[in-house]
Length: 309
Image 1 (cartoon, helix red, strand yellow):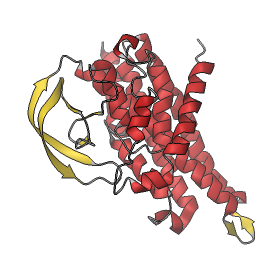
Image 2 (cartoon, rainbow, N blue to C red):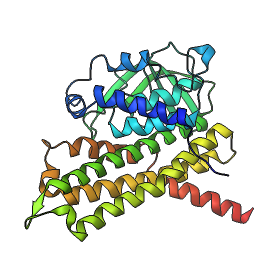
Image 3 (cartoon, rainbow, N blue to C red):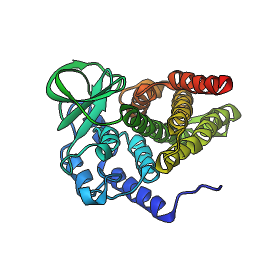
Image 4 (cartoon, rainbow, N blue to C red):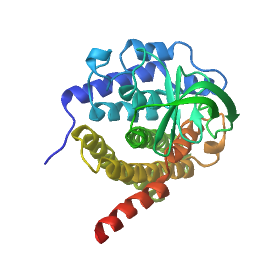
């Protein structure tokens, strides 16, 4: 079987990319460290981008995970500073008002102070918070505000594993996008930074750094896309495929961040330079819904279980 995205899916991705390039540039992400971007959520809603996988009779676009995964990758690339990934993971499983801001988490919940609906995924239970008590917690990414949530809750008739799997896939896709972003920044910097009268990108050692990052991302991407296809196909091993995807995507983003920082040198450590906006979001996403080690462990348990079956 040969898998490839359709022209319509790629065109939809390109349109979303063009929108975010205009509406969510580095200045917007930087500003989000102190104040959330006004109007951006409404724009996302007006364009139908919050209900891609929501059924048409419920006001959505009636599309699938293979459509959404490309958009989640772009949301990562632009470090979209709102709970977009959380909303699109939860929206198809929960009846809600069109354009509502939804968020979810396990131990910590992003943007719980803004969201219309907050859901906790605890073990095999999905709980809607009806009266929230929020305790702010520090995040490495200042544009991604985290809260410990307590208070009154009601159990939802939602498969918690399915919700966790959808959220993990979105995080894996975002890792891909963020890895692409920091790698592209390193490539552009290597073209203009001169040492010994030459662009540093002409040095073989620098080229090796960039190629290592590119290879890691190229090997991770097919697993992320296959995991989305598995969800759409109702594959019984979709959860396994998502864990494989998150493991490689998180590792690829980590490699891209390290190599980009190495190429940039001292300027990459400064908060004035935009690299840190995307690198810190990548660090956060690598650990959201389980890091690479967590998901490698899940995959190994599945393999060992199969071996002993």
